[in-house]
Image (tube, rainbow, N blue to C red; front, side):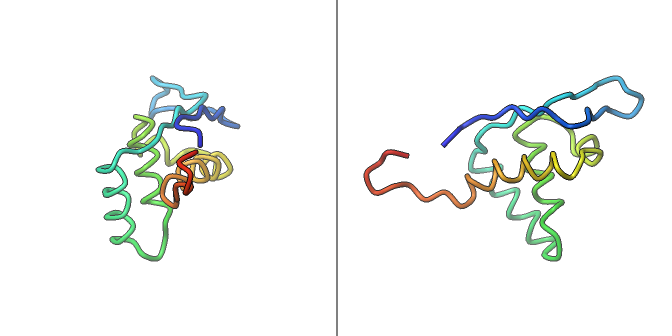
Length: 97
């Protein structure tokens, strides 16, 4: 399982005013407290997993949520797929992963 991933965005996202431009997102394996924050956010909004996943992406990429809100949904889905692997991770019996 990959522990980090760089996702080239289909359309760069930028901060309000264009001071910061993000052509890619660097994701990493979340730590325990970040996963706890994800589940807390998900419990607050049980009708949609989008805000909680956006929070997790922000935590592991160091890109503010306010900027991530401008991300294309296809790019969001690539990020979600990578991070979901850690949330549903089951180690193999032989310790190979």
